[in-house]
Every structure is written in C-alpha cells, then in structure tokens.
Image (cartoon, rainbow, N blue to C red; front, side):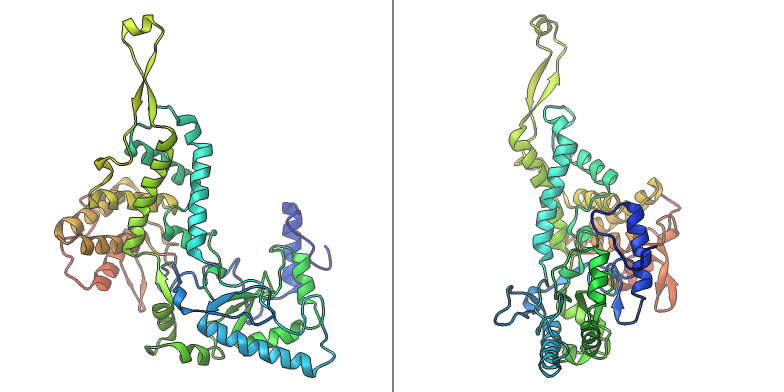
Length: 432
C-alpha cells in the first residue's frame, strides 16, 4: 500500500479504494472536520426538520477584498467571521517570518469559491434533464401515437424519472447530489483544486502552514471539509461562531439553530415550488410540441391502403389547450406520484390509495384552494418523509418517527404541525 494517497479523477475503482484507505490513515478524523461525503452530506441544505432549504440572498455579504480576483459572497455572519479570521491570518504572516509563502498559502487567505446560487443551478439542471429525456426517450417518439396529448407525455416523463431516479422538483434537487454545500452560504474555498484528488489533498494537509490555518478555523467557528481541505464550512453549533451569529439574528430565541433557519433560509416546499413543478411539466411538453406537432396514426381504410397510404398525420394536443389547466386535485396527485418516483420510494398500491384518499379529503373539505394546497403539501411531506426521516420504509404504518422523545405517527405529526381539526382524514389503512 502506498505511504501517501495517490488517486485522482483518472484512477480506476481499485486505485480509488486503496487511495481512500490510505487517506483515512494519513488524515485521521478529528472534531475540527466535517465529512460532507459520508457523514453530513446534507449539512446546511436541510433545516432541523429535514426539509431542503436555500439561503435568502438578502442575507448574503461579500467577503472579497481589494486585489482579490473574484467577487464572492456568503451569509453575513459567516462573512464577518471569515474577515476576522483573514485579518488574524495576515497578522501571523506579518509577524512570523518563518511562515512564508508556500504552494498553498500566501500572505492572505484569498477566497477562490464561495456561495453559488441554487436557483441558477436548478434552472441549468432541469434543462439538462430535458435534454437527456429527449435524447434517450423522445427521439424515438417524435411521430409516435404514444404521445397524443399532455397526459401521454406526462406518463412517459414519469416513467423516465422513476426508472432513472432523477430529481425533477426543486424540492428533490435541493437534497440531491446536484446541490452542494456551496449552495448554503456557509462554505468558502481558499484554493482552486480538483475535488477527489487525494494526492493534492494530502499535499495541502502536509503544508507547513496547515496547522496555522487549522487553528484559525477552530478559533473562528469553521470546520475543514475533510475531503476537500481547502474548503472551510461555518459550524453553526460552534461557540466560537456564536457571537457572529448573535450579532445578526434579529428575533432571538433560545434555539439558535432554529433562529438561523428561520431568518436566513427559505424552504423549497412552498406553494410556489409546487406551481413551478406544473410549469416545468407544461414547458417540457411545449418544447417537444414545438417541433413535433403531429403524430402518425395508422389507418385501415381499404381505399387508402390501395393507394399505399398506411397512416395519417394527426395534430397533437396544443400546449395552450384548456385541458392543460388541470384542477387542483389532479395537480396534487401528479405531484405526489412524481415525488415517489424521484425519491425512488416504494409504496404499495394500498398505501398510495390511502395517501391520495386523504389528499382528496383535504381538497374537498377546505374550500379555499390556497389553504387546501398548503395542507395537502404538508400532508404529502409528512407521509413520504423528509430527508431526516426517510430511512424508515413507507411500508411501516404512517412512517412512525421520534418527536420530542416520543414516537408518533406521520399522521399525528401532520395534525400537530397544522394545528387544525383534521378528523376528515382516514385514520388507518383498513379501508384502502
């Protein structure tokens, strides 16, 4: 076995495995690290309930200084902590001549990468989903009568999402591997290196100035990304970061973590993102329709067959048709099914029937569409589970989970959170 890690993007699977083993020995786990690959992949991307979130851009603050090559931003309390850390670092280099510039550390901790917009990221991602869907599925169906209308198209897209486990909604994107800690406003990189290059990471850790960098991270409430050591991530539970957080929180409570997610982040499960889901379904269909407005329909008229005409061209349903303006319940059912597909969740027909019966009950019982939408989306979320609770299989009755030290069902969770009389919902699965 090699003495130091050696793998990079060109290494084969065996080399990657051996190099990773060596890296684990070379750079032992410590309390000043975050392992965002294995232990905390959703850090900063989901709130304390496990719901995907993203930073409120009004809370971002630039960290770049005069002379920096890039204009970069993070959340304001992270920016203030990093500025202090950077000044402290400069002082050390000014007073300690032995520190000196090295391959990885100059006389300033210049940021090279920080917050990246998840809004822009999702828009690019969803475009790539359509391109892949078109190339691998739609190309063979351009004139097929398998797609006569929006409903046919949606069914084929659903199967594509289900079979490939692709995130389609913004909600799924937020907790998928397509999103990263750089979307949280909590992370800063101080070197431009290739991710997954174990040899480079080992060299960085072995730099003579790494201990200075490591100690300053701890002092100002940052942790080092174990697998990308030139990336630092604000530790929102750190006592050393707390003064910077407290300075910026406007409405303080005793729970600082909840305060942070309440004031700094926006949830992906709002009504607007449900409507966005429908908008993308329609835009996918409209894009396909633009260049494929007709399909071939086989004909069996004997006179026409004599003339060697075996099909006729028929117009597909227009994306401007009123039929595409689906009623609320139908949209919610589509959303529920796509959530199952994109999360690769297994639910029996009986359980799906149970869930959709209750979604129907919500819509029919609450005459206000806006309220019904919100309650139905909450119901779907609690019964399919958030990222924090999804280890429990859907086959377990009502996705039971722990809450305040007591195990309660998803149904009870829903009732507790909505705070309303929801007796119109089915109590169990006995009448699917």
